[in-house]
Amino acid sequence: MDEQKLIQQHLANERTYLAWIRTSIALVGVGFLATTVHMTALPDAGDMGNKLAILVSIVSLFLGIMTIVGATINYYQTRKNINESRFASSHRIIAYMTTVALLLVVLVSAYLLFV
Image 1: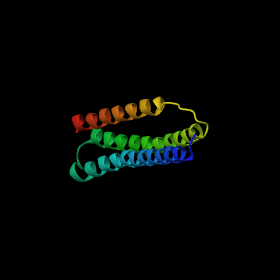
Image 2: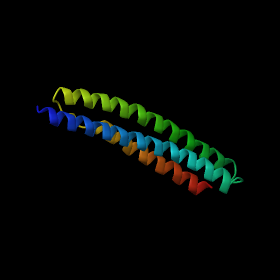
Image 3: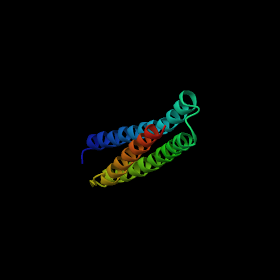
Image 4: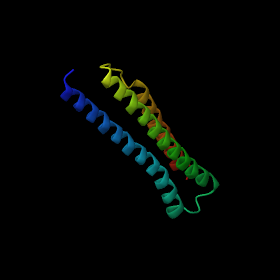
């Protein structure tokens, strides 16, 4: 394979990795946002509201960390595949992010319904 094509593929892999890192930061941000909005705008929302806000925050933090771990693993696997001129689709990370998005929508919806 042409050296230039490998460089372009590696750079694309790095851009994808950085996009996943930005996504993980956004996931953690959802948790901080949920807690901040809850504590400032709805300080007496009740026990259920407090528990849901804390749950959204903890789950968002956990999912953000897991996204960083998954993105790093995916980066190195893709790097290896590029160097070996192989292609493997990213079906696992797509399924993971679909699950993450749905979980956050459910948690935030539950929070909004019960507060």
